[in-house]
Amino acid sequence: MAKILLVDDEPSILSVLSTLLKAESYDVQPVLGGENATELIGTGDFDLMITDIRMSPVNGMELLKQAHDQCPGMSVIMLTAYGSVETAIEALKLGAFDYVTKPFKVDELLITVQRAIDYNKAISENADLKAQLNTRYHLKNIVAESRAMQSVCDMIQRVAPTDATVLIGGESGTGKELVAKAIHAYSRRKDKKFVAVNCAALPEPLLESEMFGHVKGAFTGASSDKEGLLEAASGGTIMLDEISSMPLSIQGKLLRVLQEKEVRRVGSNSDIPIDARVLAATNTSLEEMIKQGTFREDLYYRLSVIPIEIPPLRDRPEDIMPLVYHVIKRETMEGHTPPVLDPEVAAILESYTWPGNVRELENTVTHALTFSQNGKVTKADLPAKVAAAPVRSSTSTGIADDGDRGKSLKAFLRAKEKEYLQHVLSLSGGDKEEAAKTLKISLATLYRKLPENVE
Image (tube, rainbow, N blue to C red):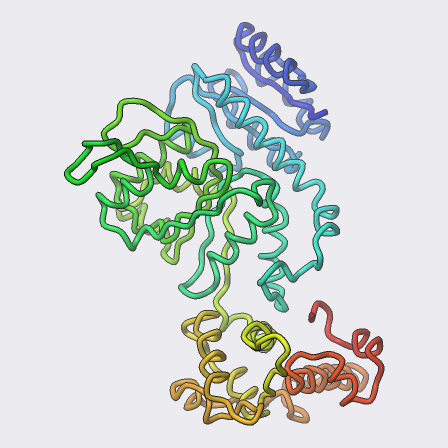
């Protein structure tokens, strides 16, 4: 049973909220005034605190700061009777999970409370969630050898079971939609729809109609009622890709959907309740757009409850060859032997800076596989731009370089063994049994010697 600390300086509000939450089987501790709540926050006994912002002498913002310092595992929901966007945004900046304005809708409050409890539970049970997945750092279709991508996978595992909105950032081609699909796949909504919308691909009137739907006669050509994508995704997940391209007029309507959990079709006067989890993605700094006045600050903080940043491929070279093997395996027809990579090709791929990120790598490998002959990928099979790229002086088959200075003999040999294992594995197209035969070791020994988290 989740424990909730309820703080307000109005006895009537305390009584109503306490009765409401207890009816939902929550263990509620009502406290009159912020001053009386300070001693309870540090106990760590609560999963959630719901506090009014305007109180004296200790207000809700001070309680939020105290909770952040003393009990970071506790979620906080702010209540405000003033509907002040500035105050609410400041609370979100300081770590509040969400805010609800007075007079509040009962359903809206209960949904927000449940989301906060679910998120808190997901964080606290993170170790158990990891154990339930097939592998720790290899979610479906996501290869993560680098620490940076392992952190991304950790975040996916943590947020997937919740309904929190997630803002996925990263350069074009880093795999933002793949991360969004992974969040959906490991959520309780996995059996429902996943709907992706490219906000940059549609002009404003069409984007508005596609997202919110329209009624017959709303505009020229609207010959019948049409369900919007937010409605279509109800029960599931909707991903708003390139959210930075969304016009300000539509941003305001989206903010209302996130706040009210209702959508109004173009040309209609009635609202339709929806239950769609919203994920957003951007390759542009929304903070800079806020400064320029082209993106709403209140919408930004509604979307970025949980931010996930995907690093560019050039900053995580450890992922390059595992991604190459992954694409080769994916593109090889069942029953066929994957082609092997010429060592020179592997050196080129590891040295290239990949300005187009994972998408460019996938296209490059697909191009090479298309033109390869006799079961081997050579430099001639690579796109001209990639093949012409300079190769670093030290490759995976080198003996020693400046990076090896200071290593013990044992550490140096282990590193070179790892490189050779990866090299043989690439030559076998990722087939571990074939690699074990080539190395003249058992399959069990190969698995034991493989670098951690390599499939």
